[in-house]
Length: 329
Image 1 (cartoon, rainbow, N blue to C red):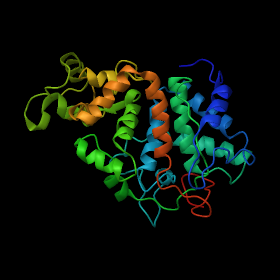
Image 2 (cartoon, rainbow, N blue to C red; image 1 turned 90 degrees about the horizontal axis):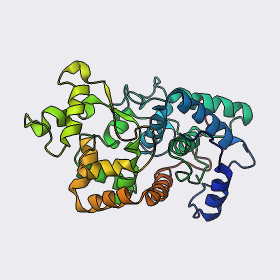
Image 3 (cartoon, one colour; image 1 turned 135 degrees about the vertical axis):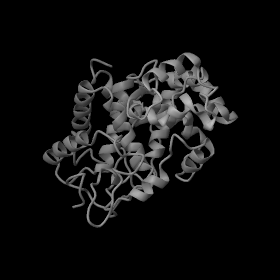
C-alpha cells in the first residue's frame, strides 16, 4: 500500500478534472466544491484509516458501491436498515453475512454532517469511498474523477437485491443480461469483474468447483491443479468450512492490479463466474488484453466505474439527503 496517501493526489486530480468527459444529467465534477470543500479529504482520511486497520475492507467498500448501484440504481438503498414498511437489502442472499463496511460509511457520514450538514448524500459517499478504496489499494494510476450530485432513495427492496445482483453460480449469459439491463456492456462486465483482484470469497461460493463440478462428482477440470489442491486444503468438503475465506486473487490479494486477468489466463480464477470469462471469445479476448496491459486496465476500469455509478441516479428534487445513512429522514 502507498505509504503516502496524498502523494501525487492533487496533480492526478487536476489532470483528471481537465481531461474528464462531460457528464449527462445533473451530476457535476464540482458539485460540492462550494458547499462541502473538504469532502474528498474527509472521505479519503477515513478510508485510509479503515484500510490501515483492515486491508480486506478496501474490497468490501468497493463491493458496497457495486451492490448498491445494481439494485434499482445508485441511491444508497443498500445502507438502509429494515423498517416496518419495507425489508431492506442487507439481508438479501448476496449481502447476508458478507456485505461489510457499513460502520466506515457511518463514520464518514457523521464527520460530513459536522462539516457540512444535510449536504452530501449517502449515494455520493458510496461512490467516493469506492474510488478511494481502489486508489489506496492500487496507487496513482487507479484514480478517476467522480461526477457527484446523487440523492438518496427513500426505500429498499430485499427481493430486488435477490433478483438483480449477479451470482457466482450463474452462467455468463445470465450475468451478461443483468449487466446489459443496467446499460453496461461486455467490456464493462470484464472490467468491473477485475475488482476481484482484491478481497476474499467464502468457500461455499466456489466449493462445487473443488469436489462436485456440475454434479459430476469430480473437480472442475479447468481449474489449475496446484490451486485446486490448495483450495481443497482451505475448504474441505464439509459444511463447517462453508464460511472460511480464500483470496479472489492469491497472487496479490491486497493490491489492486491486473493480476486477476493473468490468473484467468492461467486457469486460476477462484469463482466459476470469473473463470467463465475465458469460455467466451469476446470476454476471453478482453481478459487477455488486460492481462498484458495494466495501464489500460487502470484507465478503462475507472471509465466503467463512472458508467456504473450513473445507473438510475436520483438528482434535482428527487429523493433526499439522508442525515443518517441507515434511515430515511
